[in-house]
Length: 78
Image 1: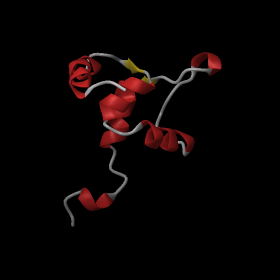
Image 2: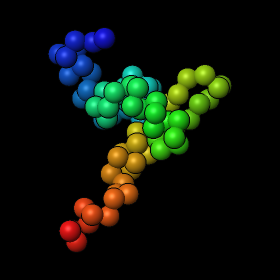
Image 3: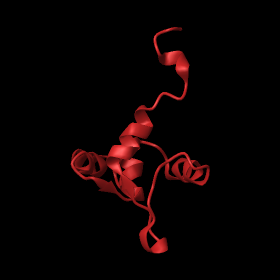
């Protein structure tokens, strides 16, 4: 596991990458890997799996997913 200061050094570059791997997704979202895998199994997170082995994530699709408002309570009409 990376030390906290090493993670902070990596984070600024993630905003410039179009495609993220699982480790980068974990840093980018701030979510634990086990939780991300749970979301993957339930079909919540968009991903690709070229060659059938490694998972890759389109950062723009991840941003859209993170910003999607499935809970309508936060639309200003509380």
